[in-house]
Image (cartoon, rainbow, N blue to C red; front, side, top):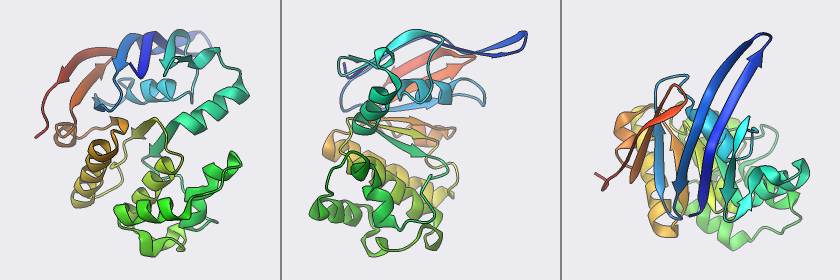
Length: 227
């Protein structure tokens, strides 16, 4: 298994009050899987994604990625591991406004003192349909184009895993479908492991595995053929 989470728990405390956002979740994800995580608002979907990606630390339980116990790492090594193994795609794109698209995409490589392979990144941008926008600023792109740029940034370091938190949440239905088909294409073509949070049941049906979370617990987990 590429990802193994055991008894994963996250409790948020506010004074005397405590909120259990995730309650002893255990799951495994195989390499090359395309998984959607669905559930109502506040069900624990994003908390799960953040814990799997090392953005937040659990109150209890473990996460192992490709044999590495994520939360046994000190903060700095964890940051490096996360940058090299995991690509994040957020609903709000998180592009840096003062950098053009090319600079946004190559920034993670620079943080690891790696030189960008221009030919590979140009091919990636062509695949994503934004090659001609590579020197544009984020504000000059549509929402769908910005999301494609965010996906390119996530893929530029060739991560083992893509974690996408509501990647179509700010997009219209047509653009949402285009982004979803693109993720599906990347998953099939490159065996990219993708875990995606979504509220959209129709988009979830396009993934090979669907996990439903309610009240911080997995209530269903189905593996079926895609539509």
